[in-house]
Every structure is written in structure tokens, then in C-alpha cells.
Image 1 (cartoon, rainbow, N blue to C red):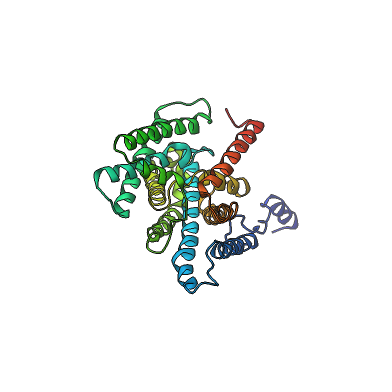
Image 2: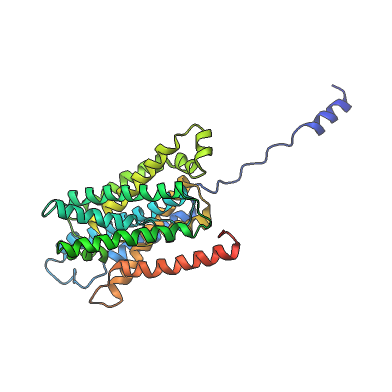
Length: 342
């Protein structure tokens, strides 16, 4: 080949590929490792926070493993579960303000608990959990069917509609509790406290680990499903099956937490929004961050709930509800400034 031909080939050839940059969604990074240590530190603080003197009492060691360790484990599992449900619902509905609290799913779970008490006198934890899961799934499907068949002009209408639906379900639950004199069931569920957690009463929360693994395995498919039915179908995915799977995962998490702990509001709103603002909307790469941040958030709120009026304790749902309401308002203001609310 002549020098001129070689020169033309060099000019016409595509530029050499640049060296790949470090992937942003790589899991093992310095910030992630620091976040892990921060959550471990919060867990250690939780283990040694409380009124009971585990050092000066003879049964202190037994109480440590009967109450403190189960409570901390329950905090971690609950935080991961509720944060993960918010992330799944954000993707599937393509709305950043949708989570179990703003779709009525938690109210349906409470109705499921009440149904278990009405149908079976003295139901076991498994029975209550089954009722909460079934009703959560039915309620979430009703909400999704509503979104599918009703054209909404504003993204704000979605959470408002969900909260209205939840208020109707909650009112019906209140009527049934008054009718059958079972108000204590709903009152205990609304408290949403980790104070009653002890060995033998939290182990069902380990189901959340299996749900997390399933979510991670189907993360890419659920992310594509969040792009819409047309895109998912064009890529060869069964959109409706993925929606059913997403609803089932959400229902299991919400039902298990509702039966064991109670109502945990707004955690699925706070955590996924913070993570998505920083890392985007990829479910697979965000899932570990969301679970970890959910653990840290609920553990910190529980520590505050235990020390704010020590020796007494306020429900963690009160702290999360206050924080979640503030974050909800900030999200609305942020979207309004950016012109994203249409």
C-alpha cells in the first residue's frame, strides 16, 4: 500500500476506543464500604441503647440476646423491606411519590390483619401474615388497575388517589373494629413500634431476605417493565407477569412487616428518592444502596424514638411519619421548580 493510501486509510478509520471509565453502578466502592460501616455503627448503638441495664443486672446477658439483638435484626430487615418496596413501585408506576403508604397498600394490610382476627379467633402469626399479604396484593392490584384504565393529567394525582383509597379502606377497617369490638387490633397495628420485638416474635422477617434475592434476580426485567408495556413487549418480556411479580414482592414485604411490626410509613418514599437522585434509576445497581440506606434510616429513627423522652419510648412510626412528610413536601417543591409536575 502506498504512503498516500495508508494516510487516507488512517484518516478514514474510526478513532480508537477510549479506555472504559470506572462503572458508576459498580457495587464495591469506597462510599459503599463507608456506608456499610456506618450502618454497622448504628446497629451497635442500637444494641446498647435502652433503659434496662444489661451490664449491672445478673440477667443482663440473657436480656441482651432476647430483646436487643432481635430488635436490631428486625430493624435492619424492616428497613430493607420497606425501602425496597418503594423502589419497586417507583419503577413500575414511573412515579417518584408512589410507595405502600401513598397507594393504600398498608391500609389493605391492616384490613387483612383484621380479617384474620374476625375469621379465626386467636389467629397465629402465620395466619395474620397470610391475611395481610393477600389483602396487600389485592389492594395493590386494584390501585394498578385504576392507573391502567384512568388517564391522569398530573403525576400528583397518583399518590393523592392512593391516599384517598387508603383512607376509604382505613375507614372501613375502623367501622369493622367498632362493630365487632376489636379496636385494639387496629390500634396496635397503627403504633408501628419495635418495642414488643423479642426472640420468637421476629423470625418471620427473614422472609425478606428471600424477597430481596428474587428482586435482585429479576432486577433488569423489572427495570425494563418500568419503561412501559410497549417497550417491555418489544424486548420479548411478558409485561403483565412482571407486574404481577412486582405486586407479589411488594405484598409479601408489606404483609410480613405489618403482621410482625405494624405500620411503617414513608420509608419507601424517603430512601429510594434519595438514592435515585444520586445514582439514577437502575434497580440492580441501586438495590444494595436502597436496602442499606433503609436499614440505616430506620435504625437511626428508632434510636431517636428511644432516647427522645427516655425512659419512655415513642413509636418509630411517629418519627418516620414526620420525616417522610417533610421529604414528601420537598419532593413536590423540587419537581415544581424543575417543571416535572405536569
